[in-house]
Length: 483
Ligand code: NAP
Ligand code: MG
Image (cartoon, rainbow, N blue to C red; front, side, top):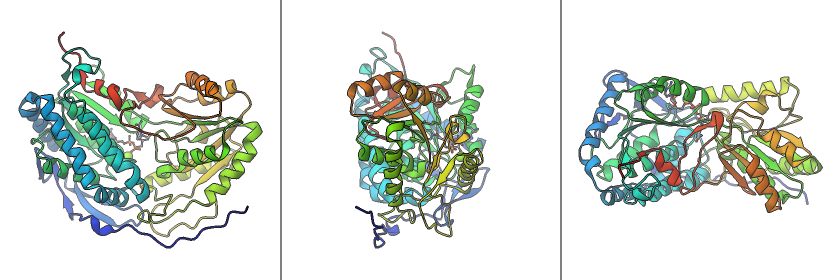
């Protein structure tokens, strides 16, 4: 049967559910305050290039104020509060995220460029789920595996990237608060808005002032947070390059550190895999969130016998993906988050061609304004190509082939990263064997990009260290107490 191109009427989600303020201050000590030094910067909608709002730029003095507020809250009411009481606040945050889910989803789509379908069905519900999950831990910390009376670390400085702005903030705040810490959160420069609405939600929940503070700004604001002497614990999600710099800067300070960095995951398809399902998993693995996913399945390793069949079906499927208005409920591929990220993707894709790989994209009209990149597949890729080694962080798939399971594992592990991987096979024993031999923090079998707050997530090697989610996620915010 031939696939025909389906046409859809536009089905835009309403923008009216979001009422943006023209300008946002910093959230310090329970209030929105003007920055003392840095002024304001715009945050734009990457699908239209329109300015959405002005956001305060926090300088070192502002960060100092936020850390001071977090310290007072830690030494005051929050630090003395019983776990049963803290749990109620964390539950309240979860419930308020659910109540404001539609608004948060539209806001995230406007500020980030991701399809509303994903913001609505994945980012926001998972963010709420993390608060629900960790609320349940707040009065059970003695079962976290750190002895009978584990203690919080103090003030946590938390820096997050732009690909899942609200969800990454939830991954950071929920375990920290449940464990009794206070927080200074630095969202990414290009996507600060959902963290600021989360700050409003903290006010709505009547969270004691200073327990959560949000300081917006560029990388220098993040650097001021992580290097502040009043910060006891640093949690960073972002690029390997910046992560390494933070690790160097923190060496010898006694601060606790967890790093969630980049990835170059292999998605391995064996010849006995259910191919249609595998094709869905390949598409989800690399085109979800425009490929702006640290654990994206950016290297497809397909067994030679089925390589042609998989590629044919994959290309047919990719031809049906709709790229365009992120607010349209039928959109599969939204905008690239920034001009800088688009330039990085373009440069790496050009290197793929220059190094001899074959580039393919479906016929795909790209809007005139905004930042866009069509879904792209490279075949004839060899392991030495930059597109097989470097994280592209865009909708670009590099396809390699293999003959034996041992070769698949060797190629999958041929990377300095080690965050995630996928394996597609009908044989359970083979999936288990491959998973045991892969050096990756998460291995999905016959699925990809599945997340659950109860399940730990994190990397090996240059993908960082420490785990977020599950009981393991608490260890990053607790130390063993006295027996
Ligand atoms: P990035 O440049 O490292 O930025 C991440 C965050 O750090 C942003 O808030 C950034 O601020 C801030 N920052 C920049 N320089 C800093 C410095 N010197 N000190 C402290 N903070 C600093 O990363 P990105 O390119 O925005 O994000 C994409 C990367 O994140 C990818 O490599 C991806 O794999 C990784 N990621 C990993 C995970 C995971 O769980 N492992 C999850 C999501 C993303 P600005 O926004 O102002 O630059
Ligand atoms: Mg950045």
